[in-house]
Image (cartoon, rainbow, N blue to C red):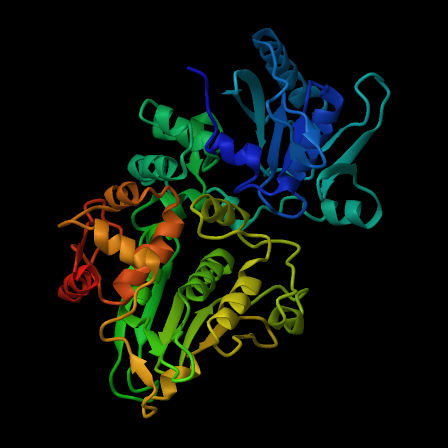
Length: 511
């Protein structure tokens, strides 16, 4: 059986979830150039998670040229043997990428997955044809592999023995703490070709293929990122790995509040917390203007801004600090608090303007998995998106706050001012809402109780995120659709049905 990597090859070739600076295309086999690229990705200078070298695909202006040039089967066997030799003799410390063969448009290609190394920095021979050649450090600059010099070389050397927390071994855990079910569920969700092989692999083999298991064969350990995503109770290893949602109906000084804690694998609790907020605390209002036929509609808080704020906290918080992510909601604002704050190299004025770019990421591996789940785009796009969607909703600009020590980070979203105008007769909260075309289609196809996959098939949709944001959550937020298992939003048995309000509206629309 030909091994596969834990990534969707179509996404790799079209750069849907992998940035261009993390992929290098080679029309043919050039061992020296590939060696230098392996060295650069293994050094992972910007903590992005390493990268991929795709052999058998030409490149033009940074984009892959399809159909691929392809490789012959005997070439692939020879290349893999040569890679083994290069990893031992031409790079220090020794380093071996993971390889997999794929057939794309009738041609064979070889993909080298080069995760950031745990014993960096790495150096490679500058020339394979000269036995007296020097050794040099290499790193990635944008979409190119370059030799490290000057300040870059000194900074790369300072990274020695510095492995990000999420990529470290957890020696207090064992491989039995990784759930094969959760791993296979993840692979199925992202459409990885490795999903087809997962049932035949044991936890160690599967974990090594996904780079969530490391160490020698006689003493393998799960990595922290593996426990965070593929253990039902990661808080056992990382206390306070949870998201707390607290609602104060009378404001923070009131005597009443509602609290719900979300614990479990990171991908699940991130979605569950966002779904819970959308279902219980998001409202849409319509303002009818006498001077024009179009009604003005807006949300108290746009869902996309909340999702970005929560995902940002999950991505960038420290899992060594025993403080949960907290979402505090009042009638006036929604706050997302996490620990610690942004790196000191980021200026708060740039962050507030949406111009801040982080040079390094605290949790590079967590970011990889969140991107595969379509929960984040990465590359410092979260804050600009929050600014953009708040403005599109007509909401006040959000604020981003930290202290002098950068010990915490707070994202503050203010409620749309239209929700303060309850005495204005022109403001009409939606009792019988005017639905979007997407919600209207959803109401029409929803027969009895149907699961997500059934609904997407009935609607002719393939993008789960688009379905969730524009169909499912909007309809639930308007009280037109409800879940059959509301206490477990991510249950595999979850189905959806029309509420009485939804049935009435559908009947009215048909009439």
